[in-house]
Length: 85
Image (cartoon, rainbow, N blue to C red; front, side, top):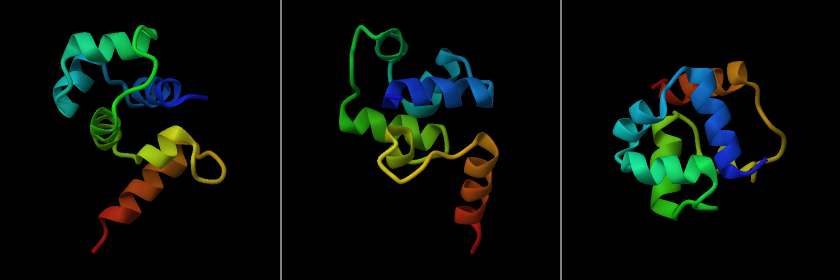
Protein backbone atom coordinates (compact mmCIF):
# COMPACT_ATOMS: atom_id res chain seq x y z
CA UNK A 1 0.00 0.00 0.00
CA UNK A 2 1.06 3.57 -0.59
CA UNK A 3 1.50 6.25 2.05
CA UNK A 4 -1.91 7.75 1.18
CA UNK A 5 -3.71 4.40 1.17
CA UNK A 6 -2.27 3.64 4.60
CA UNK A 7 -3.18 7.12 5.87
CA UNK A 8 -6.76 6.74 4.62
CA UNK A 9 -7.02 3.32 6.27
CA UNK A 10 -5.70 4.61 9.61
CA UNK A 11 -7.92 7.71 9.39
CA UNK A 12 -10.92 5.43 8.97
CA UNK A 13 -9.81 3.14 11.83
CA UNK A 14 -9.51 6.14 14.13
CA UNK A 15 -12.91 7.46 13.01
CA UNK A 16 -11.66 10.82 11.72
CA UNK A 17 -13.25 12.71 8.88
CA UNK A 18 -11.06 14.37 6.29
CA UNK A 19 -12.16 17.73 7.69
CA UNK A 20 -11.11 16.73 11.23
CA UNK A 21 -7.76 15.43 10.01
CA UNK A 22 -7.23 18.64 8.05
CA UNK A 23 -7.65 20.69 11.21
CA UNK A 24 -5.46 18.34 13.24
CA UNK A 25 -2.52 18.40 10.83
CA UNK A 26 -2.86 21.96 9.54
CA UNK A 27 -3.16 20.95 5.90
CA UNK A 28 -5.91 22.75 3.96
CA UNK A 29 -8.98 20.57 3.41
CA UNK A 30 -8.73 20.97 -0.37
CA UNK A 31 -5.14 19.76 -0.42
CA UNK A 32 -5.91 16.80 1.83
CA UNK A 33 -8.94 15.90 -0.28
CA UNK A 34 -6.79 15.99 -3.43
CA UNK A 35 -4.25 13.70 -1.75
CA UNK A 36 -6.91 11.22 -0.65
CA UNK A 37 -8.65 11.23 -4.03
CA UNK A 38 -5.40 10.66 -5.93
CA UNK A 39 -5.30 14.02 -7.73
CA UNK A 40 -2.04 14.67 -5.90
CA UNK A 41 -0.10 11.41 -6.03
CA UNK A 42 2.33 11.85 -3.12
CA UNK A 43 2.45 14.40 -0.31
CA UNK A 44 5.36 16.75 0.29
CA UNK A 45 7.56 15.65 3.19
CA UNK A 46 6.19 18.37 5.46
CA UNK A 47 2.63 17.23 4.73
CA UNK A 48 3.55 13.57 5.26
CA UNK A 49 5.06 14.41 8.66
CA UNK A 50 1.99 16.44 9.66
CA UNK A 51 -0.41 13.67 8.60
CA UNK A 52 1.60 11.03 10.45
CA UNK A 53 1.73 13.13 13.63
CA UNK A 54 -2.02 13.81 13.48
CA UNK A 55 -2.66 10.08 13.10
CA UNK A 56 -0.27 9.36 15.99
CA UNK A 57 2.09 7.28 13.87
CA UNK A 58 5.27 7.72 11.86
CA UNK A 59 6.00 8.46 8.23
CA UNK A 60 7.94 5.18 8.11
CA UNK A 61 4.94 3.24 9.31
CA UNK A 62 2.60 4.87 6.80
CA UNK A 63 5.15 4.36 4.04
CA UNK A 64 5.80 0.77 5.10
CA UNK A 65 9.52 1.51 5.12
CA UNK A 66 9.93 -0.43 8.33
CA UNK A 67 9.80 -4.20 8.26
CA UNK A 68 6.34 -5.68 8.51
CA UNK A 69 3.05 -3.98 8.99
CA UNK A 70 1.22 -3.41 12.23
CA UNK A 71 -2.39 -3.90 13.12
CA UNK A 72 -4.35 -0.99 14.55
CA UNK A 73 -4.03 -2.55 18.01
CA UNK A 74 -0.25 -2.87 17.64
CA UNK A 75 0.05 0.75 16.48
CA UNK A 76 -1.98 1.88 19.49
CA UNK A 77 0.27 -0.08 21.86
CA UNK A 78 3.40 1.37 20.23
CA UNK A 79 1.97 4.88 20.51
CA UNK A 80 1.19 4.33 24.21
CA UNK A 81 4.67 2.92 24.80
CA UNK A 82 6.30 5.94 23.18
CA UNK A 83 4.37 8.26 25.53
CA UNK A 84 5.77 6.59 28.66
CA UNK A 85 8.47 8.42 30.62
